[in-house]
Length: 302
Image (cartoon, rainbow, N blue to C red):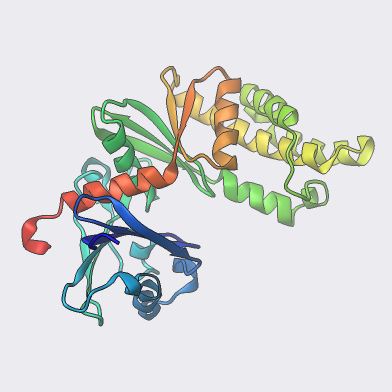
């Protein structure tokens, strides 16, 4: 293995991922665990990190660790104060005291928006990565997830963002509402999804009624779980896209950070509304953002 230069870390609520980097910022090894922020108390973070990266460490040379995500939340390892939107790409890092002197850990801040009030942690690193990979991009970014983010970037700056709880609402309705009896399983009918996106995007005021009709179609017409699940997802995403397109025309290509099933649903929904969309690999964006953050560290702190 090439000589370790530094370690890139993406530490979310449910997962911890780490990449061993050489002096040319090339990945020489990677690993992950399910020891996300939600499973740890602050004193447990250092040992959770060591479990993953100790094979990479050398006793004589402390390793720089650049971390993003929920590791910097109030409930994380050490709170990293939010940066303002205008400073999103030039953040002040937070250094963490460690017991193991082989670790030299810094945490990147999240980003806050005062009006309208909104926050993000981790997504800002992916947005930074997008601009590192595609520096000439101007337009909207979609970051699908439990709480999907829509961010506007222009001329290399973050102009603003908005969070939608669409994924969490889907989870609650599919597991803890009357709809849970109709949407079991993981299969999803693509035709039903697109039809629901189009219906609710055109008439977002119909959302609540459209949702109950999912149960009615099951009881009265035997709609399959795949159709019901697709209608639930399509209705919620359709309402979200109606909100987004009410504020911006989305005439230029929207970049979707992700290539998983949820990202594909957003791409399909946008294209159904005749809005161009392209997916980017989320890991590539995260790593590019962490590389840019590391490159911005001054020599006196390395």
